[in-house]
Length: 503
RNA sequence: GGUCCCAUCGUCUAGCGGUCUAGGACGUCGCCCUUUCACGGCGAAAACACGGGUUCGAUUCCCGUUGGGAUCACCA
Image (cartoon, rainbow, N blue to C red; front, side, top):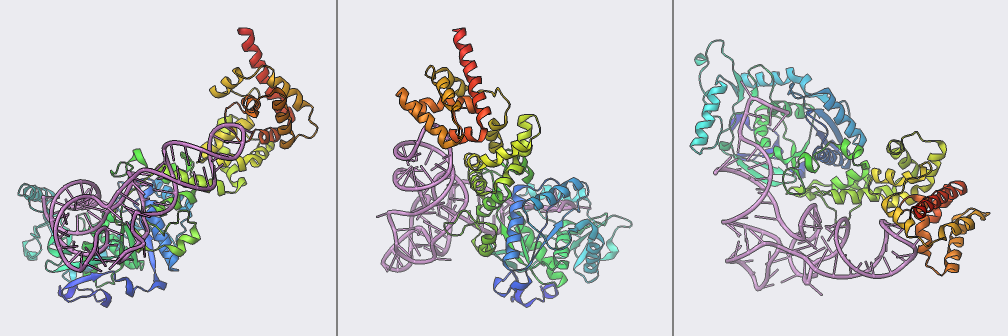
């Protein structure tokens, strides 16, 4: 490999290149980065990559940087950049320093390419796209590996066609092999003969991703490259470039991609959505998404609920699984339910306000907010997401007469005659309108009528909540207050009478 | 197809030669709590892909088979 051998001593071996020896990594200098392409939203897989980078950096007291890989001008949009920043902010993955925009550094990338050209580690290639396509077709037909054959690698400058477009390719080593001690995948070796001379600078003078990523990681001082394992193969070619520049070799950690419930690549159907969809459409809490993503492909004994501080203390790349993990919406909902129950009531009220307003068709009053706040401890035990939570709270705020669902309608129809009316008159006489007093009256009524409490409570529940299931009935009536409760019972009585008149 | 990687209950995982009659969580089922639904508690069914080795002994180490994944652009 000669001159292309990296000078970094921790990365050298007799006849091949070795990268990523974790034992010599200086923890205090750790710099990680999350480098998404702004071609869409921040999807769930990207969020997990960001999380691992964030956790690793914080665990080592290092830096976590954000870089936008926007060299593909046709596919990069400002809206996508905004979506990524928005998602990172929501998840509270705070990055250090300014965001690096890769496109803005194109001149620096080109500079490196020309430097390599001058010192003989790169060359001009005049092969046309048609020529290359034909080459690949022939290789495919012959069942040969498809790669550039190096036809311009050693040709003298005098062979160059005049005024013809050319790309700059790296003159990569062809002998020996390269080994990466990947922090997740373990030791991986690839023969240099398997790699071809990759394009560094396109014929229009713009840098390729391969060039840009290596230059930027170097210039940003990145010590640990943690990314999806779809980049594992790229790492070997990037190593050749790093070697040609004599730059220090970063440690690598290639984490497996997330798969859908059916084991296939994550598609829009099963979860490859932007994190904003988890927030807005599915009503997830950011800490729940974070906890779920952490446990997906990583474990710490039997621990399931792991908060941020604990995650930072425990996280290590060595425990990341090497195989792809399937995304399980049910488990996410379960984790979300846990965090919902643990969440502050006032925070939940403000989080569901938009949904409640939409369901109610009107703005909330101060009294509405007070009712929501007071009923939140019971409400949140019954919800797995913010949508459920909002939907479950609606009956409190509806204006009379409240709508009855099927279960409630049936309960009213089958209620023992007179039971609701008697309950109403008993409740009307209550001086101290509390859950305890309401329950006492209901129990006395049931006892007097020789029926189970459920015979009394269920029709009442239907009348007061419009549903056959709800939080504790007497607490609900206490929260609603005397006038509203009695009014709702009157409404139900009216419905029952109308039914009787029909029959 | 070439190269590389992976393989424990349906899913996420614990396990790093004997502690495994393989542990936890989600999901499923049953019971308890109970005015309903939840929450909570208790319990059940459910896995080491297969075949060879190595070893006194393999879920754990090695090889092969099968299965799965990643990647092979002037895209990132």
